[in-house]
Image (tube, rainbow, N blue to C red; front, side, top):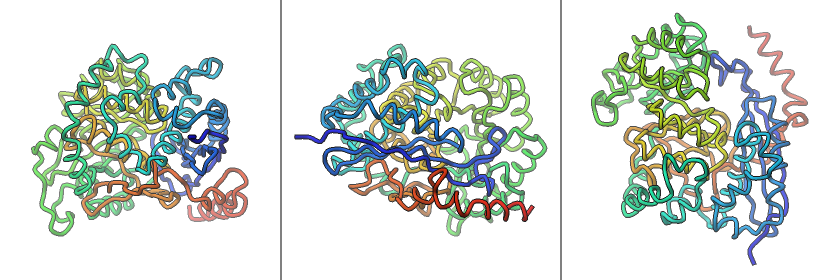
Length: 475
């Protein structure tokens, strides 16, 4: 007899990243990276862990929503859920009273993301595979059955998805072997936070180059002169061969992986991110004025729900050689559907837990592959890097078949709190998660939860006041 889901527990875990300026941008100036965390328990020793990400206050509201969603799974047979994960996803979304306060957006939707991810984590653990391997080993029929398809049949049908997946199925082992060997391409954001001094930006950029990265992102939108100055600092380092790691030759800026990315003479690429601060005309004018630092794309130039606004910005910036990326705050697959249909983006940026878990992410991966738009997931935060390497591996091996132009965000924060932290190889690429018991790689150390749980964890009750005072004294 298969295990049934018997309970759950939630934890509001917050980390004091606002003390160091990590995560600062033009919109979000005071970020405490936080995890609204859930563990599903069963009648056996099988468990599933999941989380969604916030930047501090509001985590308690999300945890309350997670409890309401997780309640729907109590008493459910795990194997019946695993046999049709698309149907299980529909069930999580279909509580009529909870659905009313979405529908399929906002707090209730990201709470579903935490719970759906925990269910997928449990499924992968039950099969003794990492999450990505569980999914890529599925038949095309099983993968389609695991996907959230409601409301997107005007962009892609189940039959079209099945045909796409079948075309890629035979060559999956070759791609899996290749990515295990070389790793998945990454880019670094850690050098470009708005709260950092010029000296820190320069130091972190040089460190990232030495670590093998060749795609770099910086935050913009608070001050144009500052953006040009910081962008020029980053460009002066990444375009200079002397800062490349020993033995690394410059890449061809016009090679197939870099063409159209505004790459500099060493093949390094700069991206910029405004975190939604501008109206549409302001975005066009402001980004055009940054042409000198040669960005590949502007990320989140305006409100994340403004599909036609993104389309107008993309059209206007094309003559400047600058593309448009968004998706971190796109709250469901229908927003991505419209961004793709309206030809509004050059790069699709899924988020692992603003979308409501793996089943909805699969829908966006399939649509992006059909429309020929590369998926470069949003990561950083806490836990997001651990999550998204699985999603990019699914995309490469089973869905799009391509990783040449894709880059997956990497931010070097807070990985030490996870039992199976993500890691980067010497060429600035993600290593492939490979432990049989790691599931979706999101299980947090009990000691981290005990220390950082809000408001009674030992850090918040004993250490925070002293750390805050030390920060004030240093200014």
